[in-house]
Image (cartoon, rainbow, N blue to C red; front, side, top):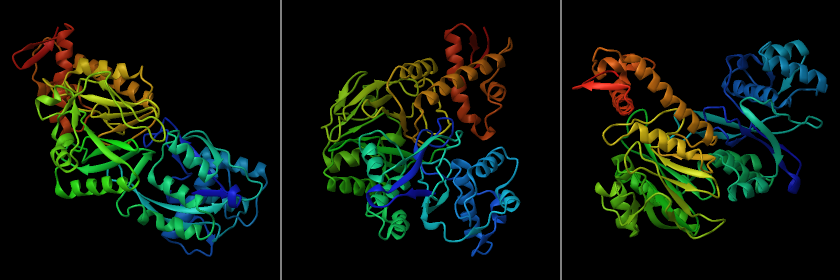
Length: 480
């Protein structure tokens, strides 16, 4: 729901910051919105027959009222006190929106909302969905006030100011927000039509996912461990760019990456080098083709160099200098062993962004620690080390980027500590096989993933063995 007020240079839109507590894109900027509710279809809107279109408009009306207190599309503007009481009942689930409307005599008419297209989430997201966008003008005398929960706060902002904050690294948001702000910044003439064309136009000549200025994400189909299906390659910097983890050697995926690089060249951005987080195939499969085409060096950790040819060896604390554009784009190298011995993360301090490879996956998932290359003690120590770094936004190789970095890192540490307790509790005096122990220690994990869970279980057992809390008899394990 794109809510606007003012005209010309005073045109503003109301945007919100998503809470750090939500699982999907926490800390990102967004517009007000949400999921359609089964009750929405029963809201009567004069001029709209029952059906999907009316249900979507009803959802938009309800979400705006629930999240901001602004009542759109009603034939009269109820007193502020009545709206506040009704909103409290809606938020408290004491009444549905259609029931409130009937009780209070609110009548809605078509025309308050203008449909402005549909956006589909990109393939790196764990749950894909289609979002319908609407444009509406805030009624006079109704000031939005965010209900804190899923949202942290909201504010009016001019589109130009919002884009400037994004370009300076102060804001993070997905493509629909970016292209909507660009459309708003171009003025009110033909605005609705321009916004409706944006979803298709955003993919021409190629799709460009730039969640932060100077950070362009290219999801590439690879063959990672489930449930992931893609590896996120990142083009970082302007005017010089580093390409992080080109993970696919599929000709179609590589061609899409090359088209993106060429499009960015039209923006005077030039590829300078390739950076690798680690050596796994779903992170390096496209390296040779990119190197061959652009004649750029490939850099990674010495351990990664045992598996493929590197031109530059990187270690903890090294810097990767990129020419400054809008701000400094120098990357700092962090050695984060655990998933592999030579795993690296790359920190961009100015925008407080960390490119995490497999060290921190997107969403709420965890990464497999597979001995002997994987080391659970080193992994947890590497996570703890990150708490001392200036990080706000995580850009993982698999899954969705997210803000609220500290909360995510702390959760991962706590999760590993809790899993270790379960592993310890699964041990007793009788030596047991991994297959038996995984059933005890990973009962909360889907059975079809137990084969993979066994590898992380083994990593926990080795960590416990080194601490004197577990011992092995051949391939079996027992307490002490």
